[in-house]
Image (cartoon, rainbow, N blue to C red; front, side, top):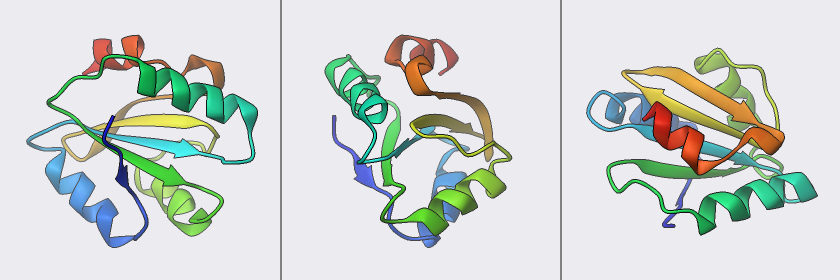
Amino acid sequence: MNWIHLDSLGQLDQIKQLSYNKPQVIFKHSTRCSISTIAKNRLEQSEHPANVDFYYLDLLAFRSISQTVAEMFKVYHESPQVLLIKNGECVYDESHNGVNMDELKAEI
């Protein structure tokens, strides 16, 4: 998987705009959490759709971006968490052990 690192607030507006033409996925990851590591590994080991951009957010290093994601896309902050953005809105989010590529692909 080729993660796009989400490390600036300006990228959020770009993600929102891009989502009108191509689904965008944000994965919020805590580098200190074993469940988050398991979820990340599950995503990376699964076949992922080519027509989607996948963003990786280290929420410990970029906590303010993580909070803005929650506010902008009207989701409760959790970790790990995956968000699917289409047409400028979060149309699917899942957290903890519910993070998996098959469910995500079904929503795409």
